[in-house]
Amino acid sequence: MNTTRFDSNNYEFNHNSKIGVYLIHGFSSSTYEVKLLAEFLASKQIHVVAKNLPGHGTTVNDCNRAKYQDWLDFSKKELSILVSQSDKIYIIGCSMGGAIALYLASIFPVNGVVVGGLVIKFKKPFMTNFLNTILCRILKTRDKKMIFSKNIRDNIDFYGYSHYPLIALNEFRKMLKFIKPFFKNIRVPVLLIHSESDRSSIKDNVLIVKKLIKSIESEIFIIKNAHHNLFDKNPDQKIVFNKVENFIKEY
Image 1 (cartoon, helix red, strand yellow):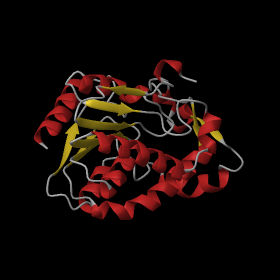
Image 2 (image 1 turned 90 degrees about the vertical axis):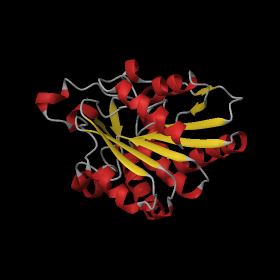
Image 3 (image 1 turned 135 degrees about the vertical axis):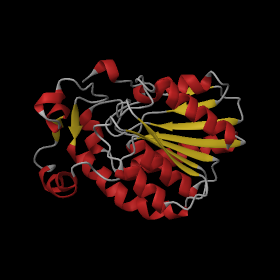
């Protein structure tokens, strides 16, 4: 396990604030990747909640036991609590967390959604949508490094588990199939952040969502240097955090 970019803790700040933000981390990751943004927003006196999804922040085997419905049900429950305590609500998600954030925005009365490093279309679709559906029954985990070519794998800092939980990856695939039809119901302001240096998420992801949603206020915001986990420390961190803060202030 990569303990330097792994966090088993759940976070909640400024419980009495009437502006609520629900932060959702990505697949096989943990609250580590959203903690810096959580602390930044907390410094602005915002009520921030960031919790590990079922099967996350524990072990890769736990992740393989989780069903996609567990992730959605958990998120709906957490957001319901925050909605009941807040006058204004925003959802922010990274990677798979961005996909969950969009789903929640289609069924909850929120003020806006921010997604970064969104994954609703896989970078290697044949491997994920076809091969893995069969192989995950035999090979249950795979070293994250092995997904990338030899010339770059040693230069990537991986978040969360050191291995991909392949049974859970199949659940991720099933979840996307389930939630995408809901995106047409989204009418709240949406900010879609994509980095040109992202090695896990392709630009198609934000372009697809921009077409699917019905929001009048939707923006694709392109940055150049951030890695996939763009709500954590990265070269464009200040730009991203300021953009998120301004989005919350505007809507």
